[in-house]
Amino acid sequence: MRQRVERLMDPDGEQLITSLDKAGIDQCVISMIDFGLTRGIGDGSLSLEAQHEMHTGLAEKFPGRIILFMGIDPRRPNAVGLLERCAKEWGMKGAKFHPGSGYFPNDRELYPFYAKAQEFGIPLLFHTGPEMYPLYSKYSTPLHLDQVAVDFPELPVIAAHCGDCYWEEAARLAAGKSNMYLDIAGWQQRARRRPVEEFYGPLRTVLNIVGPQKVLWGTDWPALDNYMSQAEWIGCFQDPPDAAKEAGIEFSQTEIDNMLGGNAARLLSLGK
Image 1 (tube, rainbow, N blue to C red):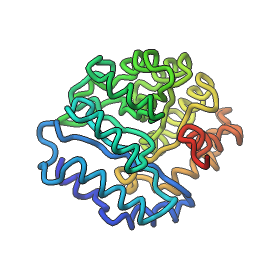
Image 2 (tube, rainbow, N blue to C red):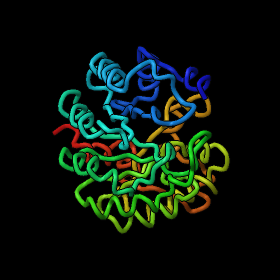
Image 3 (cartoon, one colour):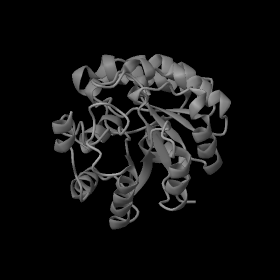
């Protein structure tokens, strides 16, 4: 795990900005991750506060290009206070979670954190779908987000990866909750492997279920950049292959524009 993380390091942000420029991407979201309470991940050499400060420095280095999501394990004793600092002092727009670290998202122990996030209008982005060792997949099914969305109706709840193998469950849940959204980061593997059967077909179904304003484009950069560049990933939406069209799968320009930034801009109140 440590070797994989080190391979993905980009401490000065230059690789990220170069990748954005090549793909014609105006702004991106960096989602921090807090694995500090997880066995076998991290050495504790850099405090969580210092990590957030470092990312704030990157956003300041490239003004207007980077939107920051905090990464805080909500079980931490100081989680609520750190959320408030991230929002007030560092201007972070959202929060990212990996429940596979060992907690169910709908555990009421976490509700004070969610209440504070709702107070600040901070969207919550949860990993959904299978997890890699040493994380646990049982905590990361979309169903666990249902209660959070109901109990905090003013709090945007985003199912990252659209649930992955649970994509239809995620879509059905989001359709019934006005504050639940889906992102499709990581679906590049589907688009490369079997584009019509595993990507365009399911994506068309998801849009039919939830409508055009609930699906957010994402990349999981840099994890999949060698697999499919950001420019190629955008091209999957802007210029679908003939095979998808021949299968009767099409997307309106409104759907494409919404997925490629319009929905995220509204959700994060960008430009206001």
